[in-house]
Amino acid sequence: MISKKVRELFVSLMEASDDSPVSYDVETEQYSGFFNNVVVDKYIDLGALELVEGGNGETTILLNNRDDFLSSFAAGIREANNGSDQSYADYNANPFAFSVGYEHFHQIAKKKRKMSGYICHGFENDDTGLIHQQ
Image (cartoon, rainbow, N blue to C red):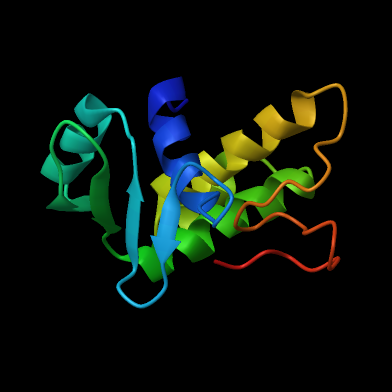
């Protein structure tokens, strides 16, 4: 099980859009926002993230091996939606990202009412009916 603070960090990256607290720059592939610095520092040390700019305010980071992370995160959501268990994580390029997506799907599914207009990588976009891709 992934801790709430860790899941929140990586989900905030997957939710990044113009209307969210975290933004994503398509040209530079950088994420900017106000993050939990302790969690960011831990994942920088583990090699999952790279610090571009930081300090007391907004932080800008890169997600290393982003393509693998995105595909595994979306696979976790898809398998959770299909009713599969987390053993499918072993077959992904990034088992950690799979688990974050898997657990995030279940957190969203627990909510009593559907989150209309929710935008997150790997989830169906209500407006288009397509799976949102970052």
